[in-house]
Image 1 (cartoon, rainbow over the protein chains, first blue to last red):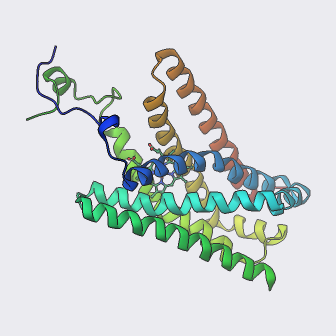
Image 2 (tube, each protein chain N blue to C red):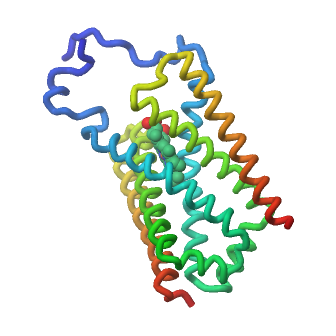
Image 3 (cartoon, chains in turn red, cyan):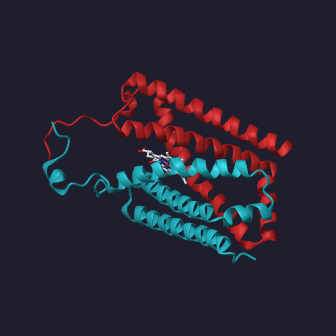
Length: 130
Length: 128
Ligand code: HEM
């Protein structure tokens, strides 16, 4: 078999935990969460197509306090996956791969995600109140 | 120094036993979602009221219907490519892997079809 010298892939016991690693795993977690959340989009669109009564039932479902909490969580997942997705795409262009840059862009991604989540729900609640 | 074995280079396949196309379509779908995702969120925010009549009228407008279909299709495509990588990373048993991937693929195709059918039904005025 191959006798080439190859670098060892990440050796977890000797790897120092860094928050860029957490951010990277968060991209995967938010991605999979969004895949599950897509069910809600399908439900909403189907309810529109099924007529007024079905739509009212869906609206009540989405307005439930527990559902609201879940929607806030989904929106954060979306905004984080979005911001960090941009980070991934920029990396793919070969830009920002230095460790210092990667740490900085990681901070930016998480900050943008939190800011967009707050802004989004602020707009929604202001609109609901008016 | 190349990290690839000679046979690996000849076959041109990565660890997932396929070429660069998966990686590339994942990026293309991500770029498309970069536009489509914010479009959907902002449209719904701008719409204001979300009563049945307003929402149906919004969804039935030609451009909105086209963009909704594109959003649903792209989202499920991107989602499948994504969960495929996750399954390939964590499920090592060959049979379980194939079963998981098949199940996920069916789910994605069926859900995308249901959502697209719903949009078309509204857009073509066939909703009750
Ligand atoms: C809003 C725009 C979006 C962008 C810019 C984006 C970007 C990306 C990128 C660049 C990757 C590859 C990451 C890597 O190579 O490790 C990825 C993975 C993934 N995305 Fe998205 N995405 C978006 C929306 C979504 C949505 C809506 C869903 C779910 C329905 C989703 C689900 C996933 C999943 C499951 C993965 C795989 C995660 C992994 O392999 O670790 N994404 N996304």
